Length: 123
Length: 171
Figure (tube, rainbow over the protein chains, first blue to last red):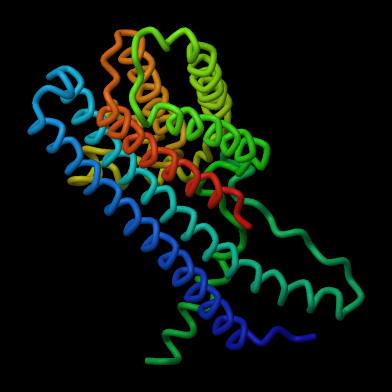
């Protein structure tokens, strides 16, 4: 069976788009949730400071420092999720490529090949 | 033009897409289950402390603090033992040399691991929140508003780690 390169390229591009769009939706929902929680927390710390006698300076400083670290971790999670989206999109496209190759191989009575994992040789 | 594009792009696509890649660590279902369990225990503890924590009530809670802090400590150790893919690390290290990303991802020298796998750093934050909660309770200065603020801190981190770990399962 011959491989239809153009159809395969189109399918790969379609899969890339689908995965990237799905990944972006998830990142966007997470980003909105976190932004809201972080804003509420900042307001809460400000309120504690204004109340004066509820928390000592050390506790206020601790909470402020923690909030800063949480914002940094939030950015790290966004980086993690972006890398995962890229990985999923890439692998979906690779899946199309190997599917076409294996269809051609099995169509000719040959054994299908497993998809090689680049990472396996690089960890 | 279209023909030239096809001549160049098709072999390039075939070459580039020869292998699958891993840019983030593998997911771990057992880890997610333990994380959910520790979260449930912690939220129950926060709920019991909504009215604050007086010094004389500390002994009643001491074991519960040890359990939740210990559970997250064990999860941090497990997370740190998970392999981080070299390709993801290389990619992030390259990106991390630039601008604002560099300040966050490469905060500790050239180590950009946090931006490939943030779970250990997030769990450290959780442990710090719970340790502070215990310390204030022990001192008798855990007022309701402070317990609420520490819960707010905790919720930000637990949401981060749950979203990330669920995504790592790649389901």
